[in-house]
Amino acid sequence: EVVLTQSPGTLSLPPGERATLSCRASQNVNNIYLAWYQQKPGQAPSLLIYGASSRATGVPDRFGGSGSGTDFTLTISRLEPEDSAVYYCQYYGSYLNFGGGSRVEIQ
Amino acid sequence: QVQLQESGPRLVKPSETLSLTCIVSGGSLSLYYGSWFRQTPGKGLEWIGYVKYSGRTNYNPSLKDRVTLSVDTSRNQFSLRLTSVTAADSAVYYCARSADYSYGVDVWGQGTTVTVSS
Image 1 (tube, each protein chain N blue to C red):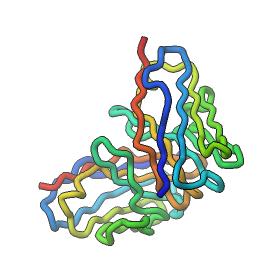
Image 2: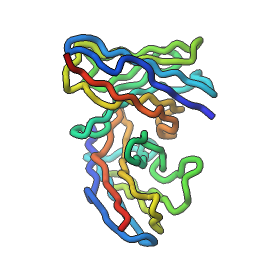
Image 3: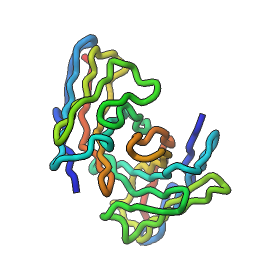
Image 4: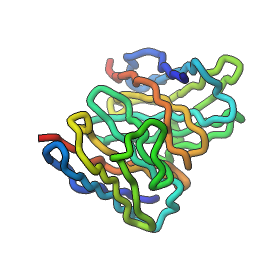
């Protein structure tokens, strides 16, 4: 079973700054099954990135995904107030797993 | 625009069976995966499993002895049954629809809170 470890736990930055979130897998994974989600309080998760680097429909281009093997990154290039949320990475091998999440707070 | 809505009892007694249905509107379930997830403050997001339109299933190993997922393509809905529930099964339950998981899970229901209590 692949274990996904996300860091940092919480990131607090002002609007306009760049946020870099990490997702580390316990073993090499297939990029095509690595996804990122955004979840705001009281809402369901919302797909941001699939296949490690492809933006989902309607996702602003300030969100970008990269990485391969065991190390993956979600970058928010210019933070907006509405980006305040918890971000999860997810991998599907034989089973589907989520990381523990990274909270982004806008100062 | 595809929408999903979870329905079912919000309160279930310990040792009984939790049953939820996900109704898909504005789009077809055919050729898609119907998935179930749950979320608690303590355990975060947890995948329960998926059922394909063909009826093929895949379950989280930690739940597979208690879970059954089924699909009714004629009614455009899919269902979750979780047996022998305990307080640890109290959670927000989400249904979702997706193509192959390589495209991520892109359509989610709003979620329903289920509490296990006598």
